[in-house]
Length: 439
Ligand SMILES: Cc1ncc(COP(=O)(O)O)c(C=O)c1O
Image 1 (cartoon, rainbow, N blue to C red):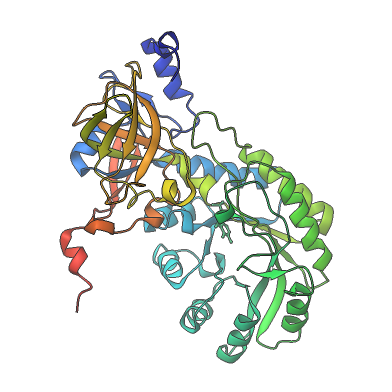
Image 2: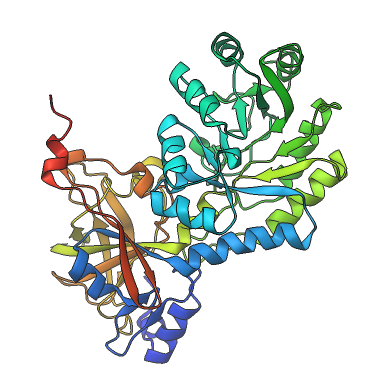
């Protein structure tokens, strides 16, 4: 716990802290009542209107990051596509917004493909992943006329040859043997991976290439690698691109170098800027493949994570003298699985009193029947009390996406805020939704 003197903050300092925050959505502010504003909306008012927990996004932040990616390509004269990796935030409104911003989309299941089509994406701008695509998913993708199917296994190659009537454009997913520094569960580029084809003989990217080049149903046009997620280093991407270069031939017209850029979950995190990250990938691809390949990248987290916050209501404050103070909120692992899944750290703040000194050390716990259902272990909060609205920033990625009905909770709504207007884009589930699938 920092010394008291460090904790004391003037209103001006606290305002600057919000305005300069690396975790809160762009444009976040403190209003005259001392409440947190996201997208120009008072978070307390949004919580009142739509209930808690709620995912609240600053729409302009989502758009700004999409533009930053596109402009990073445009500035470098890249012929390519920026794909929204929709697993990070599979809400129809997000697909629509990114389609409006000129992005393409990566889907990893029939469900995500359905959402992308429902949102009006041009099918040729939809590209499909998956390490175990079903017959139905392959047929659905082919009938929809998607841009590329990204092949992940020899079994999938056989499945496609059996199922397809007409040739489809494909990329081969390569696991280039690179392991960046991030959580083991979100590294995907190492040899010991369930994804894709390894570069060595054993798991056979070269064999897969030869096999697909000989196929009448599969038109091989390029290579793909995604080495992991929440990555702060840039060097692993160069290595991955170099590994793809070893496999490329004349047929290689498309190089998709995945997503992976890390984001700030805490105020201490300093991820690379979007422009620097894109720059490294563009330079790497040009160096290895020249100027004539079409380049694709697939950002997920870095497009959406910092655009969103989750608002909870504090329901109980339990002080265990000399040990810990627990604040229980009305959500938890059902709306944010990441702390339990990866031990991820988050910030928290009381939206009612953003200008007040954060003077209380507390652990923010969820309402689920698991002791591990803790969202923030040691948060410094401003005199938290029952009824307060507690906000966790940087929950815009893989929160809504991984939400569950554990303990029969209804999944939270998604609200887009812009210029002071709050727009409900996904409603809260109801108890009737919980029984809707019963037969
Ligand atoms: C194939 C693929 N592409 C892109 C992404 C998006 O990664 P990120 O959210 O780290 O940008 C993922 C995430 O798991 C992925 O598996």
